[in-house]
Amino acid sequence: MKKIGFSTHCFSRSLPIEEIVEFGLAHQFNAMELNVDQTTFNPEIVTNTTVKWIREISESGQVRFSMHGPEDINFSDLTAEGREEAIRKIEAALRLAAELKIATVVVHPGKAPVDRGSDGLAEARKQTVSALERCIRTAGPLGVKVSVENLCHVKGTVAPDIKSFRGMCEEVDLATIGVTLDTGHSFVDGLQNTVSVIGKYVDHIHIDDNSGQRSEHLELGRGNIDFQAIAEYFRKFEEIINIELKRTHIDNTIEEDGAPVLRSRDYLLQLLNGAPNS
Image 1 (cartoon, one colour):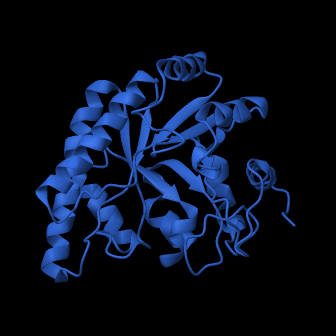
Image 2: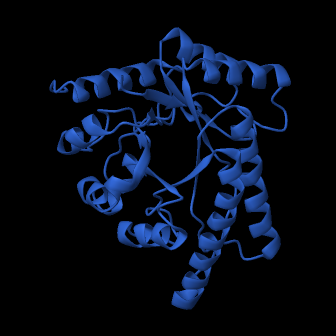
């Protein structure tokens, strides 16, 4: 059975993590991604009762959870203190993932915070590679895998195109690191080209739509991504596909929690089953 889930990122930051997980259970999702942030799923304030409850769901096999590490970090921060803090936060997420019996933690590559020129960008890339290597050394004994996400669209990223992104992952070691494909981040290189470059290394997918100009994390079918072009890749993919949306639509309206996730699942299931999407 396909592992189709959603990120807690799809929901209002004011909604408790318990309610979001209950939504997934009520609608029979068999995967979910816990997005570590300061509100919905904050490791520093989540209760022991909630941790135990999520672990029990995970151990039951009813839901396969993944985790998205904190996004307020930069492996290539200008300061050594900032770089160490980034690693500390990801290592804390890795330990929490192990406690929850979660096998995959998604992380973002670093970025150069200012224009540092070609030499500065190369140094920033080395810093990200070194940080990822350290995180992998922490993750291994915990039984958790670090999966780095394609963020080629982000200004200042240490991997500004998909070939340099793959090269960065090769420097770290593709035998020990995972790769997360975000469909909406792929407009820089084109989704088909992105899949052709990193597809065989991908162990986790974030699926979302956009207008083709920027990453908008739209409901599937609301943007211009040609998902049919890589439908066969999705059909053969055996790991988790998580729907990852923002609540603000392309027309700046905000819809109720949950409905766009359910419609996106219907869209994805039609795609996987070979039915045309309207």
